[in-house]
Length: 100
Image 1: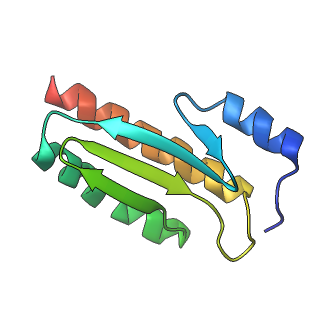
Image 2: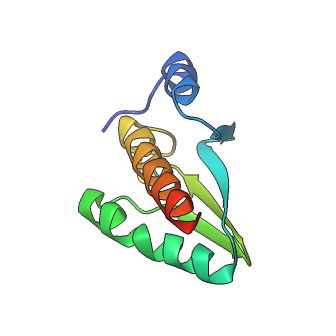
């Protein structure tokens, strides 16, 4: 898969709520009710990441999960990174809605 141009990255990023560009990766922090919610969210990422054979970098801090996505093999951002980010955002929306 080929790397996206700077303009393609900016255009794709504009379509994603809450994600930002940090170097050669896109990053977003998700907040949950508690540690259990954070871990359940992380667990929900396994299936889509495995299905795409594309795995984000994760950081967990009690009720927050930071997700960073980049294509390590390509050394930057590809369409797959933004596809995974959309899937992750949708999972977070579903989990946060269910928690209310």
